Image (cartoon, rainbow, N blue to C red; front, side, top):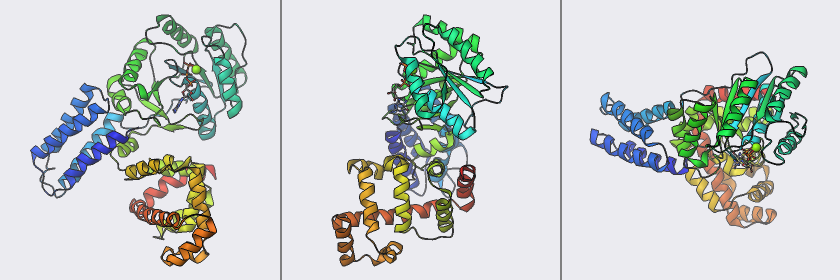
Length: 451
Ligand SMILES: Nc1nc2c(ncn2[C@@H]2O[C@H](COP(=O)(O)OP(=O)(O)OP(=O)(O)O)[C@@H](O)[C@H]2O)c(=O)[nH]1
Ligand SMILES: [Mg+2]
């Protein structure tokens, strides 16, 4: 998601920084382009208007245009307003209640409620140490309750035993009783999918709400449905009352409009993003990081957290210390990264987070990079001598031929990997510029918690 919008915004704003001086006319012209880009991304019209007007006002009103770096300042203004549009701060779930905390999952048919129920349960267990019970109230679709039971089996999360013939209200009561009796911290109620205009099902959801008295009522919406997702959220909020939204399928090619309009139109915070079909594909929603990603500034913090969740503590510390001491990134580091990459879901997953990597990501997509390629690259590094791994400058033609032969690949493959290492070295310099404290602060607590 966001690739198209991100590409356009980066282009428009990049042209502003390319010049020394900026006039009001320059800013106005750029904002017209921003407006078109946002509309093309399916952001709601009133939201677009309001956004571009505010940015323009801020950019023209102050001393921005007379400053030394007007283009940079305008980008900062766009960034800050984008963060505000996206919701300013991440909003956590409110689970600080006398247990069990009750979470009600709502949404249209096929939006991802059941999958997200399992994802959320895993998240709460693994990251927040909660004992979680899941219960399916879906008596509409055949085998819907079994679907949740299967997910429970896969993830090791407890599910409420299925009793044939029970109504959703009866199941809800039994789930709460069980959660109290067996001392669960959290109980998540997965409801039946419904059509927006299906009043009977809406009323059923309202009845469940009245019985369960949820602490969180989360709407699961499909980002691919764009402005419809926003209308759905408004509708549910009016009928049932929501505390938050989970936007799924942001791994697809949705244009991003739903994420950008949601807060402004519904007044409700997005709390999580669904990023794939697997049960670990759930991310906390961070407006500032998302703004950075949209503006092509990368999302180094999310990257670091994602890495922290899947790399081991000692390796991570060693790599961090080395970079922060200004050490160069060598083939040994690359080999470790390649292994970690495979664990983190391959290149696509990683590249989305890195500064300025949008284009490279496209190229990689075209080149069909997958896990086999990762293994091939590991083989190339495996054929190098220790000295070669430490010093890329040693790799002249004869050595490259030897390495290629050893790994069973072409010299061109070796060259590609060398280029990749040089690219990574450049990128790591950027990360270093973030400064030690910022980098460590993001990385260490997470690792400490897992280590
Ligand atoms: N790519 C991707 N697929 C997802 C995501 N979330 C859910 N899905 C897929 O969407 C499909 C429907 O998911 P469910 O969780 O069954 O949806 P539901 O809302 O419970 O559906 P009903 O109960 O029939 O209303 C499944 O194939 C999921 O794997 C996501 O974030 N990304
Ligand atoms: Mg379901």
